[in-house]
Structures are given as C-alpha cells and as structure tokens.
Image (cartoon, rainbow, N blue to C red; front, top):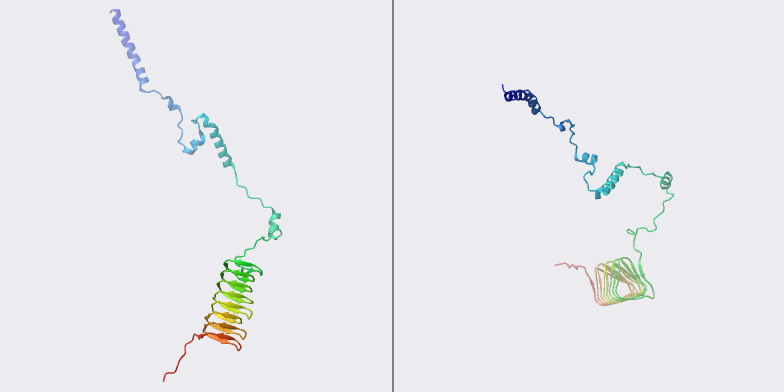
Length: 253
C-alpha cells in the first residue's frame, strides 16, 4: 500500500470518528438568554414607578425629580381633624362673644315718610314710593304711591292713594284712588277725582267721587258734583250741578 493511500484511509477513519460529536453539537445550541428568568408583565403605572424616567433627556431630569418629590409628599400627607378650642366653643354656646350686626335688614319694615320741610322750594316733579309729607313749596307734579299729606303749596298735578290737606293750597288737579280729606283752611283750584271725599274747605273745580261725598258747614265748591251718595250740611255753599248716580224707578200704571 502506498503512503498516500494510507494517509487517505487514516483521514477517512478520523472523519468517521469525529462525525457523531459534530452531529451532537450541531443539533442543540444553548441559548444564552434561556438562563435569564422571565419577568412578569407589569401594568403601565407600576413600570413607571419602578423605572422612573430612565430614557429622559438630561435637561428634563431636574424637573422630573421635582415633580416626583411633590407627588411623594402629596401621597404621604394625611388628613388631620381641625382643632377646636373648647373655650371659644363654650363662649359661642353661651352667647358671650356674640354681637348683634350693626346694620339691620329693613326689607319687611315700613318706609319712613319722606318730608319736604317748611321753607323748602322744589322746582320739578316729586315721586315717592312711601308716605310723603309736604310742608314746603313744590312747583311740579307729585306722584305718591302711598299716603300724601300736604301742609304747604303744590303747583301741579297730584296723584296718590290717600290724601290729607290741612292749611294747604293746591293749584292743579288731584287724582286720589282712596279717601281724601280737605280741612276748612285749605283751598283747591282744580278738578278732583277720589273714591270718597270729605270736604271742609274751598274747591274751585268739578268733583267726581266714586262713592260718597260730604260737605261740611264750612265748605264751599264752585263746580259740578258727581257721586253715588251726597251729603250736605247746613251752611255749605254749592254753586254747580249735582248728580247722584243711582237709578230712579217710577211705578208704571
């Protein structure tokens, strides 16, 4: 046998002897990652708390740390019951330290009457929601949504709920939805409309009354009178027509 044939035979034997080991090594290769224990999947919030801001840029790291510290302080804060001083509570219960308010509500209280004092002159209209008292001089219309008392002079139209005229001088018409009283020292130059009228003064104008009108002995009127009931005392002066608004029935034969 030649030497090269011998070398070829030895090479073949060596190859056959190495083949099983190579086959065994080639069938399975150990994965280095298999040795790592698998980690369970955690929620997003848990991952955020365990791995805070690992991939954040360096310029935002300080802001993130401050935010996380504030969050930790908020979570550690616990509710504390308010502390009440027993002495203050006892004083409040005994009304020792309670003070009445300086300003009281006047919503449900009646309005104080508005007064135009004597010696006062008003050039213009006057309006009042409450009672009005005129002792001065008004040159203008007067509107009062309550009771009106006149002890002075009014040159203008008067409109009110109730009226009381004492030592008054009125130059203008008067409209009164309620009762009206005129004393013997008062004079009126204008027409009158009222629900009821008690006249003891002087009137120059017509008087239209819804219900009853009464003229006392000191009264006088120059003008027509219209009312449902008219009463005239002896001594009263009436220069004008009188109309009693009631039906007159006649027997038919």
